[in-house]
Amino acid sequence: MRPLIGISCCIKPFGIFGTPNHAASDSYVRVVRGPVGGTPVLLPAAGEEAAEDYLSHINGLILTGSRSNVWPGHYDGPPHVEGTPEDQDRDATTLPLIRAAIAAGVPLLAICRGMQELNVALGGSLDQRVQDLPGRMDHSTPSDQKIPLVRTGKAHLVRIDGAGALAATLTAPSRAAAQLAVNSLHNQAVQCLAPRLVAEGWAPDGTIEAVRVEGARGFAIGVQWHPEYDWERDADSRAIFEAFGRAAAAHAGTKLAAAAE
Image (cartoon, rainbow, N blue to C red; front, top):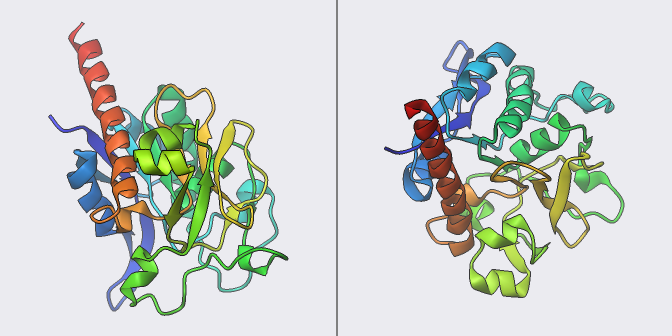
């Protein structure tokens, strides 16, 4: 039986009336059906009580990327620049879900906004517009997102901790080189790292690009880039999802064994 993989959803307007919809990109559904080897389950942004219910069913959790920013009230940050998209319903769901998933040992892979949520959920803070900071690169999404290479093209290198949890998921050449090339589509980034997080990857300008949860009972990694866009052609992106899938399958097996006792 394939492990059930929860995929966090955003609230987005849909149709001529702008009706709020719970949505996640098809990229995450396809990667779960592909290298993760699981059954995708979309998790509506329905609040903390729903988060508790989700956790009792899923065997792994993917925290998705999004154009919305984490609400700064969660980390005592300044108000966002006018026009910055927020999704407080998602925040209300994912932040408690992250803490509960880590406590329960549910494998977790946090991608882009998901990594930012992971940092905030565990007590860290965010820079809201990295591109405006002195000496930092422009990591943001270009305004014209119709260009395929924006998503699959490599924007910069990430230096990785060759002895870390992320490195253990990568191909041998990337582990040996202690670096990999990634895409870049974000405005927010880690400012102060949460006490339980350990940095494992850095952009050339020092931006933290990968983290692991210290003391987690299983797979718990965050990456600032989007491996779901290029796993079909990039061996390292695929390897990250395969490692997550193995952890989710093992967690599902443990749950089944416990239920049979």
